[in-house]
Length: 375
Length: 155
Image 1 (tube, rainbow over the protein chains, first blue to last red):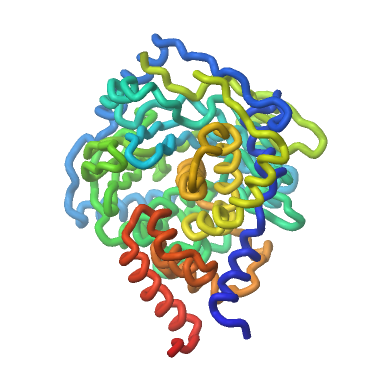
Image 2: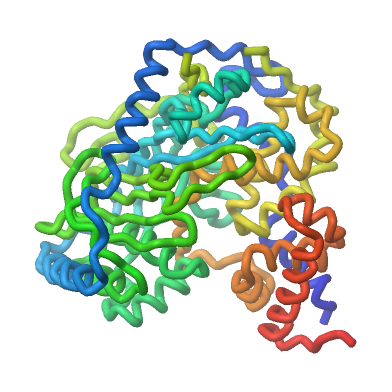
């Protein structure tokens, strides 16, 4: 048998094979579909309206203040009681339909994701937050559609505006626009979650939770193995929220609430709003630098959203993120069974697929700048 | 804002050929196989977009390592769901599991230094940390890996 270093080399290059120039072009085509990247570099990005940008910054400030937990954390025994009730409520809910042949599980998630504009050593960093609304239609075989609308990035710390302007307003945030991909595709996908199947094809992932055990301890082990969880209770906490979101059976949903109850350090926050402004019950778990909050509807046990707040003030590359800053979130919208990728579960028509060419699995409507010009 | 300038075809292909292996392996250590590859492509796309900056850099790999991690955050929150019926193309499942059990810092040190021959200084610069920290992570990670794989320690 080869020595360990050789085995490591072979393993890494086997499971993560080379990225080619074509792969890079596929990424660029998503961002700049009109211009073939090698032949036509991207053109000028438009300046944003100062009025809109200022409004965005104000809104971000309001969001930061509004979405902090509305009450202090209670001891875990209170959390246990609330989660036990949630488990009972979940068990009493009607069974969600699973997609049959020719049908799709539809779900909508809105999430905020950070991006940094990397700077050389010694240059101050500014982090931006972009809000993405993701509509997913996924069939059990991994085919489907995913449409992602990305909004204009805003500064993670709104009070950094003056420093950002003084630094020359460096760009940040993900490209603004809409990506729309049909699966399977051979291109790098525009969003996730996705998996790669055979022959270099990318598929959407379909979480078939019918095989998940419904006893909390067994569920914990199964989830660890299934998701490759190595990140401890905070990872389990967030993944439990995701599983709750995508069509789990009442028994499984009940077990997930019991699993959350068993995680060490889970606290009850009481009445809490998600980022969409919906009121529910918040439970939280603290990581090393962040507090992770799950907000659910106590009447139905439906998860409304997740929020991540900085639990201490941190400074990195000259950027200080104050304690309490909303550093990430997800809100969960409608979910249900759709008859096609062009319809929502209620039968209403979804936006038209943006564009489709033979051999091209995704397209993008590029709407201009990703620079949150705050002036 | 200045117009974005991309490189010529051959120039960029040469750059990708030179940078890609180290960048992909480094991103693998922190993001895993699939997301690591995606982040590599994203980082190289960023390099194309910002070619005028990249071409002046002495060590663009470290810079693009950060770009790749930053750009991959859009996929960080939601997990990749693995389906049982799609076999993982893993040639050594035990090694993969054992590497996953290491801390991120240990995995970076073990894979890049021990596996691919990076110097500890290179890894320290990549992660903005001390050489001594890299050495500690390497020793602990290797020990943990050998125990997990039941490989005998070298004399």
